[in-house]
Image (cartoon, rainbow, N blue to C red):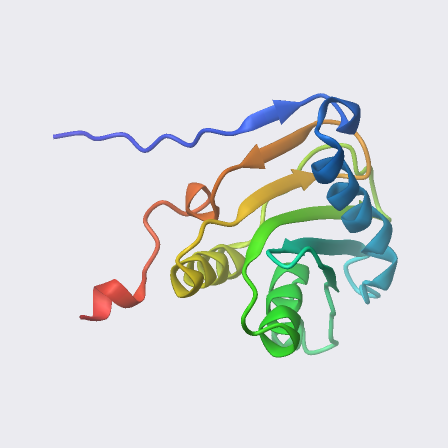
Length: 160
């Protein structure tokens, strides 16, 4: 028997089509790519999250000469939030990038480790995290839940 997994997302041609709150969050992610430390890949990624208390928190990728030691923007952000605002949930996260070696005109998606981490935080908070994905300009994808990025994720439920 064959089954199918489908992912739904909203597509915007640019930020002018979005509501003001989402457009602002995306702009924060875009502008914070400069916080990235990416001397090896030259691929700067930043994430901005709006918490349920209204605060906006940022994270950026941090590379290391020993490649496995680096950390992605999404996990940097989630670590900062759980350390500084442990009782707050993420309502929406925007992810953007700046590629020094090419253009930054289309949405990118979190890596597998970040997808798994995002779904873990959704389960931990019992609340979906809306995800906004974009480059420095151009098209924008909006997903209603991190689970839309990883529908067959491993979770704590699997260990019961």
